Image 1 (cartoon, rainbow, N blue to C red):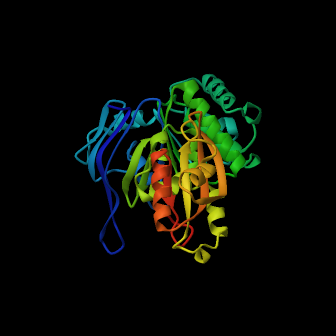
Image 2 (image 1 turned 30 degrees about the horizontal axis):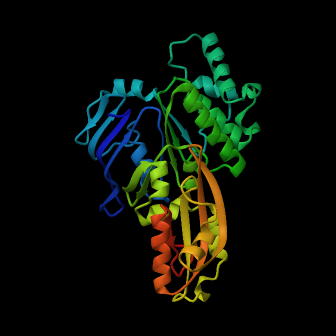
Image 3 (image 1 turned 90 degrees about the horizontal axis):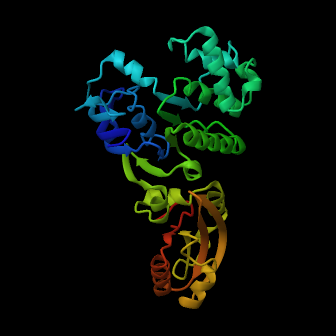
Length: 354
């Protein structure tokens, strides 16, 4: 049993014509205490709807939900009393894409706002709010107003506010989507530090696999309201089983831009192919392109290369163009998979995978 247990959860909505639309369908997910669990998928995949069932901001239509050992929902029916739910929600912090700060009050008062029902005295609330701003390196901005801060700073205030009631769980719902790459990295780094320092469990909802790779230890990929693959980040990246996963694991902006710059239509598809390779550099030689020529007898040109750290393990991503007939292409794929390389061949459109 985890700190969050979702069993066969479904969420249905009626559309304008009264037809039932399944936003989430029969999803089961367990988040263990201390996880930074990423839920990734394209817009409309159902990831935000699913995760909002954790604190019943979204009521499910079927399934069971248990949080911190307490049953919230059984067989699609809320079983926790509303009063108890309100108390339980204080232990589930949330941060959002648009920050949700009150612009008419100061930064410290925004944090204090979350403590108005805490039972603390006014002086104690102020002291605690300042300590929370210390956690996110914004104590010097305590008397500023949100509009005077950058987007990254506003998100730090939102994080401080979300931590005010000392939650066990922090849900980040596309919290970095509105930020530039530098601020995104800073916020992700902060979340990882807070998880370690405060023993938090974090659920990170995003459409960017790059964010997942930076901080998560586990990941679930959603498509059309269902989880199509889940597991440890390392296993999912190095051994993807689903086509969507294969596109996500190497789907950094650099790879995508490289793909779009290639004129795939001019390839001789009978004698050329482009592959995405993802592999652990601890298990695979750095001279993989040379190895292909030596072991398989094909010419391989590197179009893009990158190394990322997943839990301090270097993981390589390559785009390579391989010249050779159909038999040689099959031998290439077989050789790479034997070497524990995740191999995905591009299709003719260039920005999709087969």
